[in-house]
Image 1 (cartoon, rainbow, N blue to C red):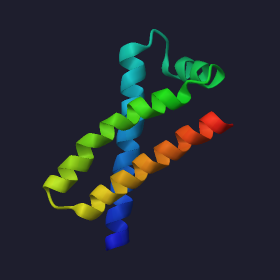
Image 2: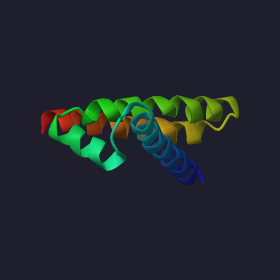
Image 3: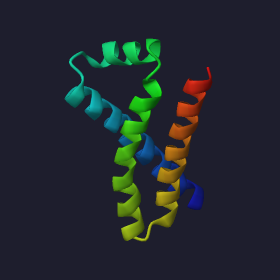
Length: 93
């Protein structure tokens, strides 16, 4: 049960991170989603877009804490850590 709650929180965190990335691209980019992501990879600013998308993880994290669903909140935190590792990975390689 605990692992399932963490996994659900992780999936919610990933979904909100991806949603944040797409929302950022749709609002602030003059190009399409695929062109913006390709350009971000080529010009090495994909980490910044991932970090801006991860800001949206605050919403489910605090909602889960407010509802006393601490294991769901841990999953969202884990998804945010995965995003941070992805950013570090993109900077190193």
